[in-house]
Image (tube, rainbow, N blue to C red; front, top):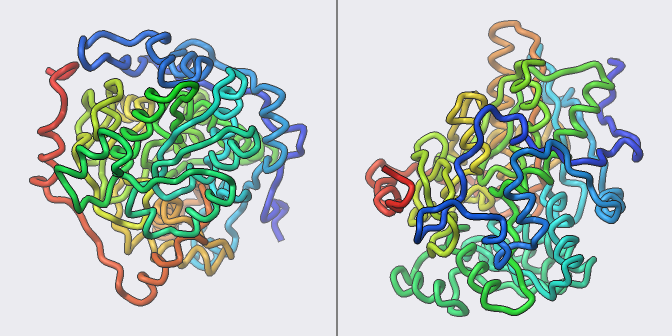
Length: 458
C-alpha cells in the first residue's frame, strides 16, 4: 500500500492563521468597481451603506498580501477545520489511469459546503461593528445554510432570499435554515420593489441569483442596522476562501506532492478562487506552472460564452458595476440542478486572471454528463457530491482518462466543495432517465448582452 494515506489531515495548529490576497501578486489589477450613474470608480467609503466597514476595506485592498485571521474566527474554524485532502485511489483504479487524483473535501459541516469559511468571517465582522441584522441571497442553499449557521452562532437575525426554483427543489435546505432561526423568502418576491418589478415583467420566472441579490441589497439598505453579505463573486469572499488552497498546498508539501492540474467548478468563483489562490501565486511569481481549469454549466456559460465587460452584479440593477465575464444581468438561466452555479457573471479577480491568460482554461459541461461523473465518483469514493462539485469531478475524470491514453503520470487536484444529500431529486431524475440538458442559443444569450450598461463599455 502507498505511503500516502487515503485521507490526510493537517494538525489543528497547522490551520492557516492568515488569508492570502492574490491581487497583491497580480501583474495587472481587475478594473475598479464603478458608480453606474457617474461612471466613476467607487471609494471604500462608498461601500459602507451596503457592506460591513471591515469587509469593504478587504474588498478594495489590492496591496496587502496576507490578512491576519482574527482569533475569534480561528476558534470557529477549529470546529470544522482542517478539512481532509483525499487521494482518490478507488477512482484511479476504476478509471485505470496512471494519474494521481487528489481532492480537497469541504463538506464536513452542516452546510455541506465550503461556504462556511466566508460566512463566519462576514458574520463576525458584522457583529463586531454592532450591526443588528443581515440579508443575503442563496441559490442551491449552501451559502444560505452556512450563513444561517454563522448568524445563529453570533445571534444575528438573518433574512435569506432564496432563488425560487431552488426554494421549490430543495425543501430540506429551507428546513435546516429555518431550524437555525433564519427567515427565508422565495425570490423574486412581493416583499421588495425590485422583486415586484421583476414579477410584473415575468410572472412565471424561476428566479436567479441576480434577482435574489437585488432583493437582498434593497432590503439591507432600507433597514436600519442591517447590511448585505454575499457568498461568492466578491474579492473579500475569495480572500476568506483562500484558506482552502492554503491548507491544500501545505498538506501536499508534507506529502511531497504538487499538482500538475488544478480544477474547480465555477459559478461566481468562490471555491475556485479559494482553491487556486496560493498555487496561482506560484504561477504569477514564476515558482511553478500548474494548469488551471474552471468548469461551468453549459446552461450558464459566463466564462466560455460571455463577454468581458462592465455589468451589474444583479438583475434589478441596484449594485455597482463590475468588470467581469458576464451573460448580462437580464439573463435568466434554465432551472438546472446546479443552483449554486446559476449566476450570470464571474468573480472580477478570476475574470481578469482568465482574460490575461493566467487561468488557463474554462469548460462548459452539460448536466447529464456532470451527473454521470458524480455517480461514478460516489460509487468509488462513498461521498455523494453536490451537483456544483460534480462539474469539477467531470473534468478531473476526463483529464485522468487523457493520462490513461497518453501514459502520463500527472497529479490532478480538484475541489470537492460539498455534498449532495439535499439534491436527491436531481439524482433520482438522472437515474430514472428523466434528466434533460439545456444549452442556450446565441440568440438567447444576445438578450442578456443587449442589456449591458453603456457605462464603462465602449
